[in-house]
Image 1 (cartoon, rainbow, N blue to C red):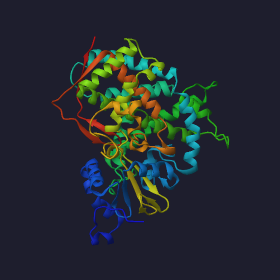
Image 2 (tube, rainbow, N blue to C red):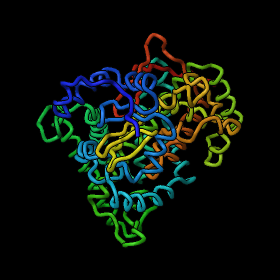
Image 3 (cartoon, helix red, strand yellow):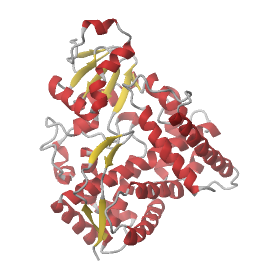
Image 4 (cartoon, helix red, strand yellow):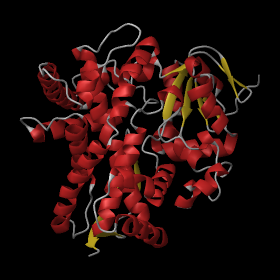
Length: 455
């Protein structure tokens, strides 16, 4: 096996502690993460030793598939990443490993699949409709829509998926979810060895702890109330409570339910929100695509609200979403740690090394995509489905840990885009330069839009 190519390391650095070396080598990453990763791939190839023997960037679809699917049992999220996330998510699906993760996945997967129903879609439609009516009078000026979409997607998650509401203090819960999202964006900077752990009483950590207490108060009250129901409901939390491991008969205790609820609160709205925002940005920037999109919505729906059955007919709308997630994947990086020595692309990857995969880089690489920087939803049409390899596109990860909510995200994004298009044309404020903001999600920063009535 050969050694993976990468930046050379000064001999003096080799005698310093690993954290210091990683900090020095990571300076370029911290300044411009996406630029750093793209440049590394273009300079060194599809496997790069970013930090020799410790951090590897893999970009080729075959290598990504090897880590996420073919040899996934050798790759875990790793103690460094999970230790940063566990104070938030405990042993939820996002952080659990091994048999515990498998047990939770087996309990959660059927329950989540049962929620993808016409009834849930009907709730998505009614909730989105109320926001469309609100935008009719409030969206006539250029502004950002992130807060609106945060509330809309959380509304759908809470009421349509969990069968509950915002509780006794809606603004406090909304603030808690928002602050936790901001805090997580700081925590997951995995090349930064100087981030203060949560137990250190920094101003940010104190805010985070208050937000966690508020979220915990809401979640435990919800769990207790749901357990007292004589007749279980069909909402996701009730299904989680009723779920039993087919081999052991075990169910989730309150702490496990809390961990899964917080994981859902974090991941169940932000991906959809950013997908919708980036889709709006791309549509407003590409008039020809926008016209085809409006034509499909008008033809399929004819002015009426979309039904569950209409989703399969809104094919171009789905392609717009898929292409948006190719160019701007909300989950922009995945990190795994090797348990044992491995070989990737003919290169040695030692046990304990971190393997980094960046969909943003793979999705835009000319080796795997024709005209990769062009916004072209047709590349996801059935006629062109064989143009790219499976793991050249992985906005939701892949393998056994493929995001459990991927179909839910597509369904909700389709519904919001279609219903918005029925009433409004989007106009981009060209006086604001839209930039990528790398938090825990890849966010559209400084995106100012206004909605102009179509009818």
